[in-house]
Image 1 (cartoon, rainbow, N blue to C red):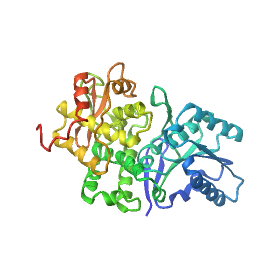
Image 2: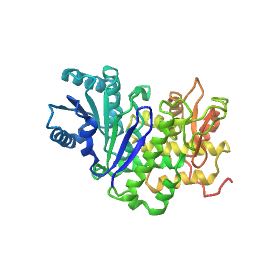
Image 3: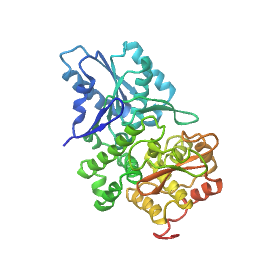
Image 4: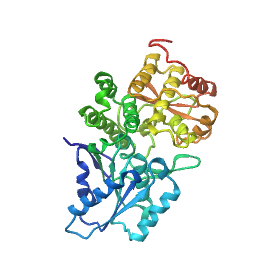
Length: 392
């Protein structure tokens, strides 16, 4: 069964979730296109070649040039050198504004491909064909594109929406188990910030079904995560605050923002402030979802210390994430992570801002917490998990 999720932004588009939906790429590319660039990682070379062949067969009635643009795997693709290479391919191939870029891969690949499309001729159409759980529920939807720099992750980029997104569940069959688990961290995030039924489903069915790439349970979780992302970005595409959804809560603490500032799309950054800092300090050898898992436990501890949530909800973070074999502790030093967090996109001036929970399914911004509380919360990542109810 194919699930169609509408992203109601100023230029609405559909996300298709189901087995074999990548065969619908031709309908998204359209009939007026002369050139298509499929940006893909090395690991998907053979699959990209098959996608190209299918597209050419389906568009046999028109002259179509389909170029395979191979880039490094994972975060190694998200830099200025690779971006320049992609521009060079488009230039040599004569890409015009009527042509299309396709991002075929995980979140790092679609981030890069989207930025290639956003920057070439100041914006050409692009389609995302996501091949990982992480890409499906996070990077492929919402129009955020970009690359990393030496200073941090995703600091250079643009908002550029796709004309459509294809989440082909058949492509998850060959996904390494660690990558599948990493993607589920973003699904769990959606459960904490907006849709608790995600957490209830994971807790009720057991990890066997959740981690089975062919299961209806995983398909349901992916669709639930995409719905949260779609609703959130529809209300606040450019992360300016406000927007629809019960998680559009108010900023609090430290005087930043003010009572009239609702959090909007920033809610999707739950766990990402520390998570991105870990990724940077570890030179992206830690998977994104693993880093975000640690980051979620951190901000849960931080919110608890500010009296926003109780110890049971902190423990629930640990329990759900640990059940998926995602990390909930970190033994590294805090000072370099604190320095990296000060470069986070949510920082205003010298004031750190964290997305935290004020209740299950309701987020807020905690602005300017003192350094002692930041360090105490981090120290809890190395400590044994408290028993449920402790500290209440």
